[in-house]
Length: 189
View (cartoon, rainbow, N blue to C red):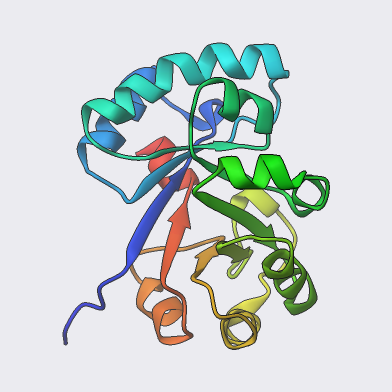
């Protein structure tokens, strides 16, 4: 059996780390994923900028894109041209802000959200959560049919998120995903 080529993104969550967060990021960057999304949701904008200023050089050292999350003005201040946004933030992005970024990603949880994100200027999507995951304890995954429907509804790359493992990553690729995202396994291993 051949391995399907795909893109792999890592989403950070320093609260899941069993070691120093910066050491973990260095190990992840050394493995050369297609990008690291700095998603620390609990931080204020000021705390986030301080963390981003430390993580960006680690990613640059290994030529791995550091994709900032949610804080549009932080990304602009730090001259980071890629950003990943929740749909409500994307909805409020001004044309000037959109033009600043070379790549805008958005998380979606339905076909309708995916289509809206594309109409608002997203050029890639994270769709999930696909499988059951500890991050969404008690919530069943949306499944492969959901992922396939999102992939068929839009013409931009879709990346699966939620419960992705080595055992099921080929299934998300067969459903039409361009790649996948992991958080828990990356932060804890």
